[in-house]
Length: 555
Image (tube, rainbow, N blue to C red; front, side, top):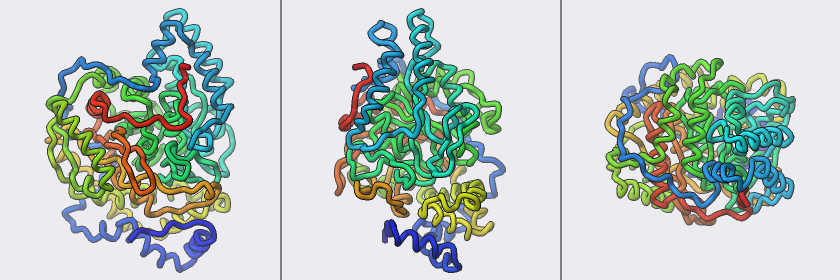
């Protein structure tokens, strides 16, 4: 039975009850709602000894499938590549492109998204960066694939001089220095235009935030746009730059990418430096791009996946940094001939039929392109959502306990309810869930010894209803949280690279929305994920209608 959606006085009352001894009654229902009871009913065969570190388990060395040298997939919208071509020909300049974007942002024509995707803009500094990039292009000395390209970052990533709000009411002080990902982009010549909105502390995948007017779904003002990288997905979908930087602790890149009909990639855990990201100390946390095309994803990886973050202890695990850029760029034209694609049929069965059908069509196109589809089963995959809640929840609770004590009155009732429930978890429960995570990691590695990639639908539900009249209303949607993370948590818990590829529009009871195919690779093998993403795009399965409010930054 679906968990009730809570708002207003009902939500406030339940939150107050959760701060009394009655919390244990609420807890009992919550554990059932999120499948934790079913997880703990599993036997010892699905538990392993605790992992000492969350280092991703690599099943084997990447197998070089594909015929290579295929053309880059065509794109109906501007990409970094087409913008670079305009720079090189002199048709336009980085300065002119930024000026067009600034005009659009000032006009506030957001289409059905209704509200701006940006929490803060940095246009003065962006103009200086665009002018410098314009001089380099005129001199024929661009820095690389992102030189002069407008990029946004998520409002948990520090930008010197701008507040890092993390979707809250109480964080407002300016950051002293750029996050590692921001400085990496600036060093590559990217024009950082500002920061995109997110859900409160990144802990909701739905796309609601009582403290800030998050943009609505670009295909329906009566639905949420997904989270927690809500603004990033909307910005790319509306054409406000070909690339936005997001972050993903339980689907927060792939969920809004899917809802917005764009591409999203969560790289391998440890691949991209996390220093200066307010949420970057979780063991399920990854920084990744949302983009207009697969080539944009590959070029972002070439720029951001290669540098070593000296202050991120997990970054040393990626030992292939010398060739990751070349591998990802080459993968766009590699193809999938000879690839073995493991299809998790249980996940397809758990998706709504319309969404599963779109993802299935994408699989058939990959098969036509030369991939071999292999049905596989990972026993604990069905419990990844419950394991994820028991991992990310306590980790976030530990990091937020001081904020809760100091700023609790400034937090939403929905967040305080979650934190109150998390405080009831025992050490034994958390550690048993960690042992299930260890088993899931090993089960995934075992399957990936025989296949190159895994495939599931991206999401187990369409965007959640969010009426225009509910703007500014606190919303707790436990059922939405469970369904949106149902297929996503698997890759966060294992640390494996995972992408969402748009694969058409799925007609649901409340409208037609983009569906997504999730592709999961072996540890450190983002290149194979990109190769399969490009094969989907080359086959034409990734085309979705342009949303109301879309505009070209080249016109």
